[in-house]
Amino acid sequence: MTSTLPVCERSEAKQAELNAQIQRLESHIHWLGQENEQLRAAAEAAEARGAAAAGGGGGGEGAAAAAAEAAAGELRTRVAAMESELRKSKRAEQKLQALVYRLRQDVAAAGRDPSAFDTLKDVRSLEYEVDYLTNKCKKYERLARQQAEAAGAGSARQAAPGAAAAPATGPAAAAGKAGTAGTAPAGARAVALADKENRA
Image (cartoon, rainbow, N blue to C red):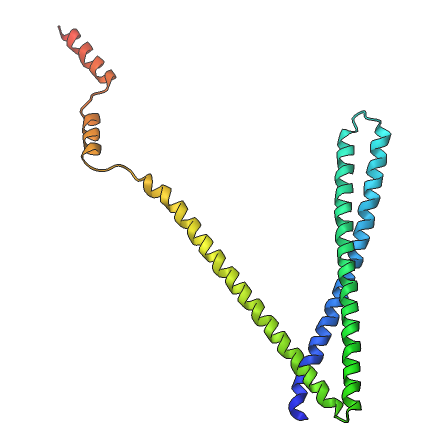
């Protein structure tokens, strides 16, 4: 019985974690509901101001009211989705608890020790959690490899234009430099010609 004690403790810790997560979801839904009410009130007030302006310079307020109403509609959709998800999660939890209770009663009715059923339930629950986390880690590793490959391909594409834009070298470049060096500026030739005429 002592060997199964850590298993039960881990199971109870996991159950407490799930309960805390449900409480956080409920708190978040409550906060979203309050924010939804505030946005709805702001949208109604902006709409009333826009109607009172009667079109004269009220275009900006009308746009603000429309934006506020759109944000409020999006928030209402999110709140409704989260409430639906929470209701489904609660129903699934209640169904699972009822199922476990009935199975435990069946084990006791068959003349077996119900504590053995509880221990086996805890072990199977932990095995499920381990498999779930293992698959999740594999998924994240696969996504990390894909992102690394995409980043490497992007770096290669960025490096290709830089290599094509390297400065020209060779005889053509040397000839171009020599031609430039051997040509005197027009201003220097004019000064030399003026000095020659003054000496004459």
